[in-house]
Length: 378
Image (cartoon, rainbow, N blue to C red):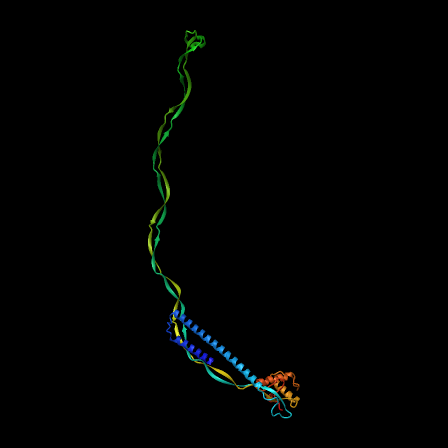
């Protein structure tokens, strides 16, 4: 019941999620809506994964319960084995208590795993890059200045006109010597006799003291002085000065500066732009229901521990053993050497064959049913 409930819940959740997706009115040209749509789909996928995980856990628990029930039935069958001696035993035959494994029947059933639904896919807008020629600068005109044109010519120009100049003739001088009075003649009273003053004594006088005072005449004193005097005074004379000319180079204007208007062509450039080629679209895809072939294994009989006829000294002839060994070897079982002797490898291989074919088997015996299945005539 839990498994069925989880399957129903899973399909209901998927159907509800997809129905919600289909009813949403998305604007296909809105990038934000597309992002929200992807987020919603991711959340729904996570929900589906969670439900599937729960379903796997339920399956695992169910299988564990089936194995426990099988073991319990097997133990019950072994405990109820009938009698200590084989019933209806016949002379010359050997019997052993052999486990007959439980029998199962497999049936195949088609079950719906996922209901039919609808998936919404968003086909994003498609863009492509194209190169366009765009105007970078409009056509215009510019003024170009044509400079003035000059020429260099030689010209003789008057530097200084004809003139007269006054030349000054300096005065000439000469040296003249003359006597210059330094001190004029004078008289001076001096003590002493008149004879001591030569002839310069003009008179003498005796004072009351008896001293002789002479009036002495002192002559004038002269010195010779040499001085420069003008011989010829300074004067001027007029001299004629010729005109002075000079050859010079000068730049003369040939053509004055002017302007002219020059047309400037428009400038174009190429740019890479992204253009919308196709708008985003919504695509609805029908998802058919999913079915799965489920094989059910049902037990038709339980394990049974019962008395069964087995091979023994009566029917274990060398020929029969060799036939048994050859048949096991052909079916891929390891029996060692085909020597007509029942050994451990032969018993183990025969029991593996019996177990895989649902035949009774025992740890130390080979059942008659196994021998007949392998084509041994007894």
